[in-house]
Image 1 (cartoon, rainbow, N blue to C red):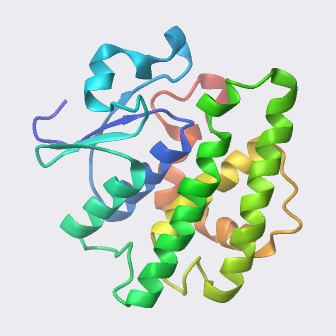
Image 2: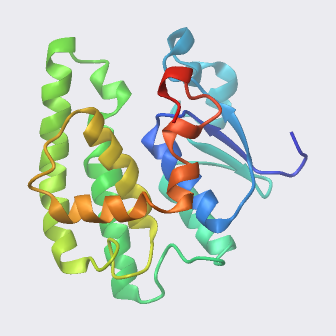
Image 3: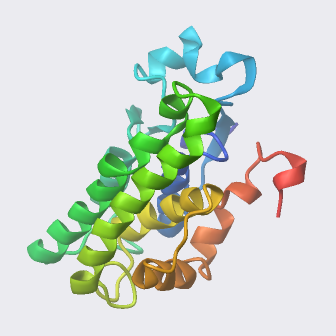
Length: 217
């Protein structure tokens, strides 16, 4: 690994890791990946070595500029503040910026944590799917309503933002849990548009160094 190059601790299927991979791609930042397998060996995120980087035992973690950052939204905001070009992820207009943060929080605080691996592992196998669908449907109902007043081509107007970075991985989670998208036309439309973009494709879970061969695209 190249000295001084940013290092991302990531798991191919982690939606929070995917958010950061999208942001790094949009910002044009070259980085190395150290895969942390959340399932193998009882979860590599629980090793003492990784816990020193992430006390919450969660990916992603980004080492950059001699600082170690955990929590995907904090990482994305740091990248935005230190590298505002070539693309802004937070609009300069305060109202639009608040909308971006609101949508990001709906997903990152209100949906994703309730259906992530650590929560599902505490449930019986037979209730996991029902629970995940219920949580995602509840959140997507709220999100669809919000997007009807904020969306243009993307989540907030016609510029890509942190909200879009949060949306795409959460839609992928919903697809894995076989959520019915017919009530969410705005979410579906924006997601489809974003997935045509290179930054969302190169960062996709099917194209990571730790993606199992049977899931590779």
